[in-house]
Structure formats: C-alpha cells, structure tokens
Image 1 (cartoon, rainbow, N blue to C red):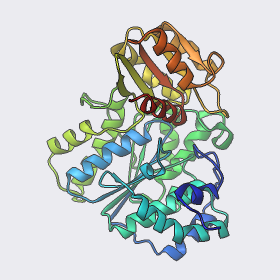
Image 2 (image 1 turned 90 degrees about the horizontal axis):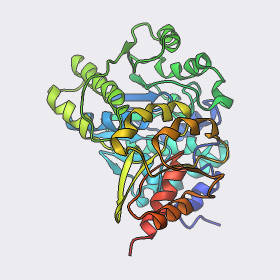
Image 3 (image 1 turned 45 degrees about the horizontal axis):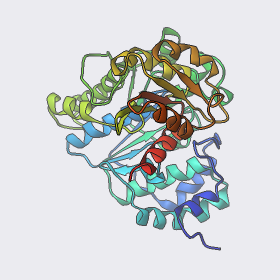
Amino acid sequence: MKPQNIDDWLNQLGQPSADRDYKPGYERMLALLKPLHCKRPSLRIRIAGTNGKGSTAFMLAAGLQAAGLKVGLYTSPHILHFNERIRVNGRPITDTDLWQHLEKIMPIALAVGASYFEVATALALYHFSQNNVDVEILEAGVGARLDATTAVPADMALLTPIGLDHESWLGDNISSVAEEKAYALHACRWGISAPQVSEVRNILLQHHESLQFSEVFDLPCLMAGKHQQTNAALAYMALNTLCAHDVIHADKNTLKQAVSQAVAPGRLQHIQYQQSHIWLDAAHNRHAIEALLPSLPDLANPFDAILVYTRDDRSLSNELELLHPFTKKLIDQTTIASPEQALQHILEEQPEAQILLLGSFISVAAALTWLKQQQP
C-alpha cells in the first residue's frame, strides 16, 4: 500500500525518533546517492563534536546568509517536525517537496537497507542540489568516522567541544571519542576547532596539522547561556577564514551581528506560559549539563523546579547532583512519569513557577506540544 503521508514513508525505516539506528559505513549512503546525481555546491562545511553542533550550525548559516550566499542547512534531530532538519535560507523544506523527494528516494533506500539518518541526509543533499544552494552545512550524527554526512567530500570542518557521549558506538574514553570525531577533518582544506582539553587537542592535530582553534570572546548572543559564546566564536572564526580566502565577502560587523542574532530551537528556549517562565534545553549528557551550569543563576536563582527527562536508553541519574544547588525541586521520571505530567503538577501548585526542563529533544518536544495544547 502506498504511504498516505510523510510519516508513513519514514515509518518504513522504523521509529528512531532520536537517531538511534546508527549504522556506520558509507556503502548504503553512496548507493543511495548515486542515482540522485546531486550537484556539489561551491562550499560544503561539516560540523562535528559532542555538544553545540546545532547552535554553531545555525550561527554559521546566519553569517553566510548575511554574506549573500544561498545556504542549505542540515541538522538533527528535529523537535516537532521532520522538515526542521532541512532548511534553505532558514526555511524548512515544505511537505510538498519532502513528499516528492521521498517518492524518488525511498524505493532506493529500502532496496539498499538505508537507515533513517542516511535517508534524512540523502533528502537534504538532494533538496540542496535541487535548490542550487551556494553552501551546504552538514551537522554530523553520531561521531564522524563512517557517518552519513562524511560520505561526501567537504571543504571545511568545524569541531565543537568534545566530551563523552554515545559510548556504545564511540568508546568509553575521551581519546576514543576524539579519534572518531576527528574524521570530520579529513580531506578538508580548512579545519577549525573550539577550545578542547589537551588530550583531545593533540589527537585532532594528528588528523589535521593546520587545524586552528577558536578563542572565546565577548559576543552577546540572542541565545541564552554563556556556553553559546564558545559556539559563536567558532562560527565567527569560520566566517573570517572564508573571508580571508576570498570565499565570501562581508564586513566583520555584519558577520558578528548575524552570528549574535541567530536562534536555534530547544537551546535554553524561553517560553512564557501565563504567569510562569519555562526554559527548555535538549542537554542530554554530563558534558552538556556542565556547560549549562554557569548560566543557570542568571535565569532563575533558584528555579522552582528543574525537570530532567531523558530517553529510555539513557540515564542522567549521576548528573542530578549537579543540578541540586540550582533548584528548590528536582524531578525526573522516577518521581513523575512524564514531562507533561510534571509541568501540569508544578503549574497547578505554583502558577508563577520558574522551571527548567532538559534531558533530550524528545522531552523538549513533549513540553512544547503540551504547552501548545493548553492554549485556548
């Protein structure tokens, strides 16, 4: 039976709502791309790392658009709609385009056994080719070595701060993770990294001798959180490098303003709900939570409640102790079953509550959906 909607198409690949179907290797990806004949853009940029990839990608895209380029942006996972993953000049792919691309790509994908993430990546590359973008920004999924996004050549690679995550795939120590992420640098003319711990720094330099490291500076960002300064510095250095090599042409103030004004959903996203203030963040590992901590007193001191809801294949139980000093109540799935129930419980008791919810893109999506449903 022919699929009736976009979700029907994607459901044939299973239900990896947060890209849990990682299949390393390029064979399926290359087989998927071969009949699509995607054009390589003038510039292709990879972004890998543990945390901050999405924020950096949105900042970089904003800067490149401000320089007059047509920008294809591919990020993952999405929050509410699959379309969010694939954008051209900030606009998500339409349902019409997505449907047409799926009709072309899905038969090939099913024949070669492609994963959900591989299909999403192929959809992005095909859509960007059809729209004749000047530059593609590809956010890596798990790691970088044998990731679907590194199956195609790139001109520049950016590495955000690297920490432990996806240990079952990347290894349970920082050196193993850094080795996997470093493959984003391969065959790239330019490589730029955010500041890294010395162990990671040394490994990255072994993969790219001319790798540059960005320096954090005071650039006020529209996105909340002091850690966004690190992402902004990385994006800005990438833009300056492209300017220095006459790839793009824009003055520094234009680029700074574009980077500082960029917004990525689900990153300390602020929602005012009636009299309450709610912040939503997809922080899903210790590395990300540690990055958030210095910013929390500036948002609420203390929060009335911090809600921690992660995926069923993860645990943040060891990280809860980090959050205790910043809140009156700490709630997770062992206390109240779902983020929606937790929000309802707190807001019924305290309509003017200040709340932080984090743990995954799934928990952010659940909160946004619930809050939308409460609107009259």
